[in-house]
Length: 325
Image 1 (cartoon, helix red, strand yellow):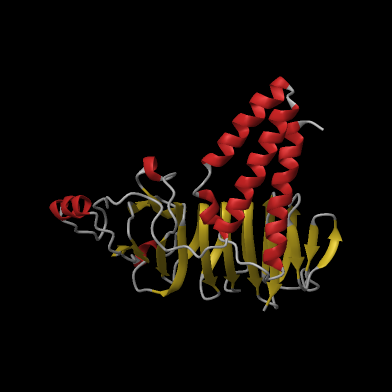
Image 2: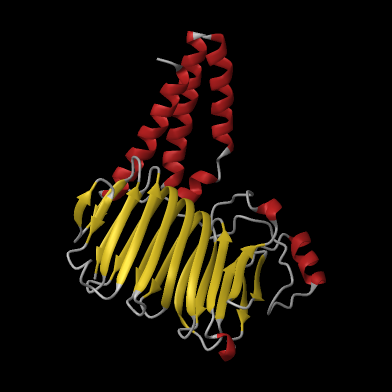
């Protein structure tokens, strides 16, 4: 057997085994802890290239041994509860609703201050823009996102963490109001540590929302039952997503693309729902759905219901659960 195939086989067994143990509640595994040691995979890849080229049996044994030791370390590390610190540097960038003295920042850096900072980003609600759709773009990594409730503003984002170069920007066009919440300092997106910032969103219930989320690694707990969400799109790597939808609109589109993720979606029992999947080796649990064909599932009231939810799932090694409430 070729060394590269053996390595990929061991990696797939490791990921599948962890997901299975999580599904049975045997372990709690925090994938963001694993991503902090991503250079290990560069080392394994380098060993694979060297020893595969030389066809050395001893080298192959060394390469496999390094892989097994590395995965054993990651297995132990992934079960440790994160410390809720940030994945990025300390410099906060002045932005919307933030007023931080630069001298204080310098003093904090010099003194090694690691105190938790809290600040808020917000955009006002403009009634004349209510007829337009509101597009919310969210991007980041190692962040825990939560939807806390409503606000009289268009959006409030309350950030809590030891770091955070976040910004909230608004652009108004003829057809839409576009909000972008993101990490500004791209150089620090891959500076992993053992935790995450926490972001609590409050959204205006009168707005018509299209929400696009890109989450390299992290968590999102979003309850949209009381919000008019027309489209929700999620692109994630090693992430955990727990989301609920309501039936305030006749049609809702949900698109989820993930690598190694735990995705749980809840839909109203009165809404007709269709699921299309391209899930590779992912685990699937669609409670209350009938299998129509390969990769296609529907609720019994899909054709008769006046409210419909379309779910498209695309994942490699993820756990997908869709249930009705």
